Length: 169
Image 1 (cartoon, rainbow, N blue to C red):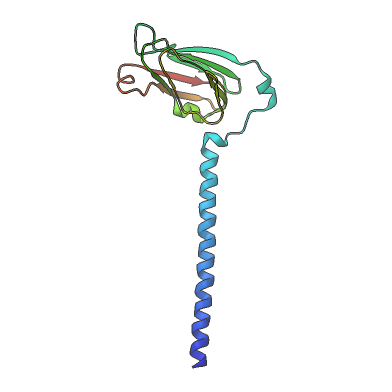
Image 2: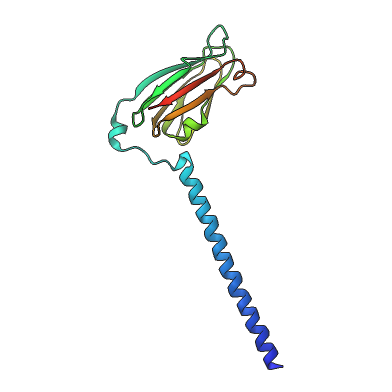
């Protein structure tokens, strides 16, 4: 009887050890997955060095639509250089809201801040909505060359041609 009890006890301890090791392995895998996802997100992009941040930003103006209600970005093609600091000056002179949406571009830049009215937003930005008559300033540093699509995600606006191309050299 003691032999059976000891065998059951040994089996129970073995099961607990295996279960504990499995839990630690599962936790480690989850931790690695979280770190990998963080490494791929724009929030994990390190800030540029102080020399770049001391540069006066290069101003680029973009209008979302116009006062005759045309659905277009003016200009629709934007060019930036990797490692330079920019201030994107966005305005919406049209009578309807528009979005400045360039998710893939936003993923490869470091955003210093976005200012609109008396609000300053810091961190990863993927889309800006500008209501009629609104203005916003987006300070950023592109980090990776490539070509990225720009569009207004208001239903029907992309299809009507409110698109553009952002090139980072």
